[in-house]
Length: 217
Image (cartoon, rainbow, N blue to C red; front, top):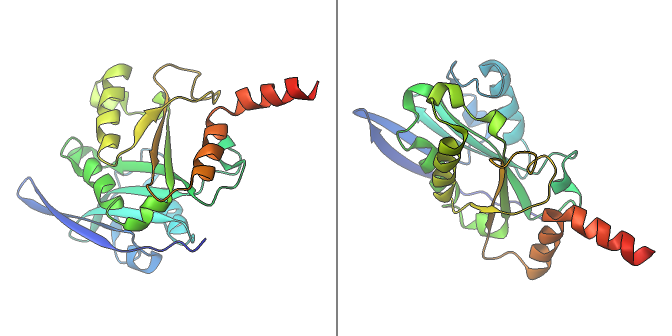
């Protein structure tokens, strides 16, 4: 599958400042920007920037950034699921994962995250993908936002809806280990019925495994 990428750009005005949302961004273009030192939700900023550069190098990888002048203050990443996760079991070419989304604390709640998702979906080629996001409450900034788990879940769902990602049931053990965890899904309009059925098998993989075991007896 050839992963076609079309660059889109949107300008926001927040706190009387111009914020640019754009992407997908290539590795050479990313190297022209400063990665804000407070982008540390997943790992130290310098290491996270290296991870983002490596994703941008992938054929399926997509990086959408929010920047103030030449400083990246937010981003969202898309790539194939981790080989160790169930979502890579069938190595579906049409299945990509929203791996991370982050905005520096100073600009959270200003609509940047929602706009990162909106700009992501401006590319018509995204209609060829099933996009998933696995949401685990232990990754959420509950302390920094002073929100309860369920308040944060509500905010997260509203943000994801900006990219047309909606909650979907699954029997994935890690997701169902806590009721606040969830799987978010967007199925592009060009995804084949066969791929959708294969994805349904992935969502309820344990159920299908048990059924296959019974039929094999």
